[in-house]
Image 1 (spheres, rainbow, N blue to C red):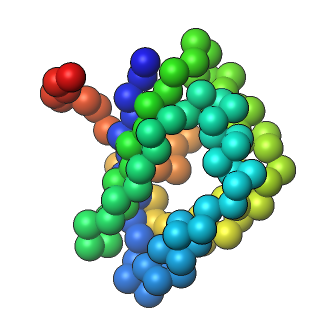
Image 2 (tube, rainbow, N blue to C red):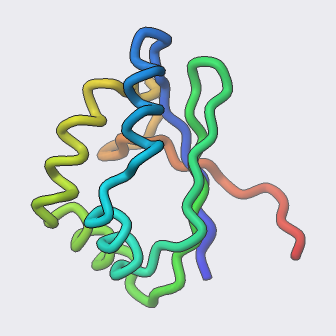
Length: 107
């Protein structure tokens, strides 16, 4: 299993709309995530920063991420979410959400 933690900015003026969307995530989005082996997905907010965590249980992370990105419903969802978010300046090339390194884990 791969654990993934990511962060992105959320300007205060977008907070209410972003949280409203995430209070009722489209079922097709949740189904696509599950089909791509994404489980235990959570998003937290601290001020103007969003923190996400999920667990990947598949065996080809890149292919499953590509399947998510190719999904028309996911593309529609992202088109609504991305204008609300503010990527961090120090994210890696090609990242939207900045992936964080794991420094500790205990089961």
